Length: 348
Image (cartoon, rainbow, N blue to C red; front, side, top):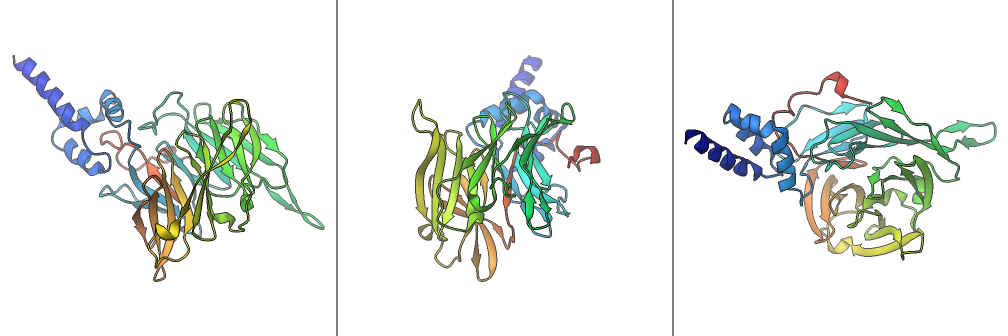
């Protein structure tokens, strides 16, 4: 009977722990301190799978932001009571953030989990891949000569880079803003001046160029790649400082090739408080419908989150002088994730 009662109590405890809130990792930390049994339960691989399945209808919580503070300086900005090790790094440029990993560099690149069929809720300890896109400019005697743009794929399992896939185009220089991983198995990158988008197929290792929607505004920095509700590749574009255009790249019929379809136009003057100065697009949270913009109030830069479905606006960072923002999103439970990363875990 004692054994049966203990089993029932374990089931009750597990049901309680499954309901720990996603958006406050400190709750899990406090629960793990109750006793060794609870800590072992929270760190158990089977429990972690059930926890992610229980919350699968919600995106992993956004624990914090990584943003480029200039110079370059990669800065880590927590948004909850959870405080990890200091991750501010002078000389590091944040490039991408996905599946519980952050990538810092040079040029344009993307990081992603390499496990087929993974739900990406807590996979940051497994194999990963890095897609890297770059070109270079050589000083000629009479004019600058731009090299073709090439893409490579790195595998952490083999420790090797793929052969390059190269495209020759007059406007295919990658622009250092966050990429997006779409449901078609490709990573997309913006190019300078916003005229084109680079598509790198992760299965075929093929790099191609897609023309952006026609543009009348020269403010190409106010372009942002995103994913649409159906998992496709989309584009957010801020025109004239207040008109937010949302586009989707998808087939217009069962037999036609993909084309741009304008989904929506949002007047930010009606969404953001009227005393804010000209906003800029800084980032997008994959798996959600949230974009991040910065606005200026009384000379101070503020980063705000806009939920596109409801147009709800939330201030997330105060006095944050950033050129781009990467939301770090992952399930966190104590036991397997603590302390500083060893040097071997930091890959540049």
